[in-house]
Length: 197
Image (cartoon, rainbow, N blue to C red):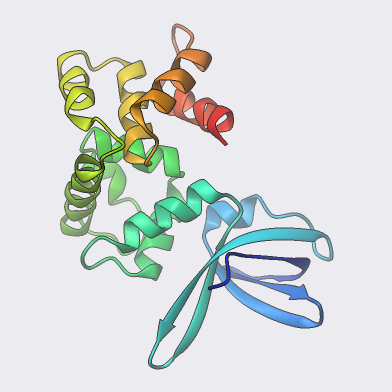
């Protein structure tokens, strides 16, 4: 398994890049969000990767952050969502925005990716929430109750971080560290991820 590739960025396409590592050019499929964060051509880049092995070949998918890779792995774990579908969602939404949409069951936002219909978005919301509920390190029951009882931006952000796989303790500390009155759930998640990363 290739965890990441570090080398010179030699090509940037619409949905892929080529990274030269010791004379070998790796063709890596990427999301629009990853494309936007890349350095210039011929600069060094580190891309976290997922290797998809199928009968007709091997494909690499890459991300500039571990959060995006983790969300990609969660998305492809959903029944009916393949690597291309996961990239479509990650091309229009950040990991934090996806987590917030899952936590608030925002189907419209989840279906904003190209080729992602309402049924797939509903499946994503249902299955990702279920995965977090089964995780021993996350107390989703308490988070879900507080989320429904008091739908504040702070609780939205907390629920979003739980969906991303952080423990309740980690998420609470990060949210408390960055929260200020008037912030949106998305803003809180973005700042909290910087604290957690």
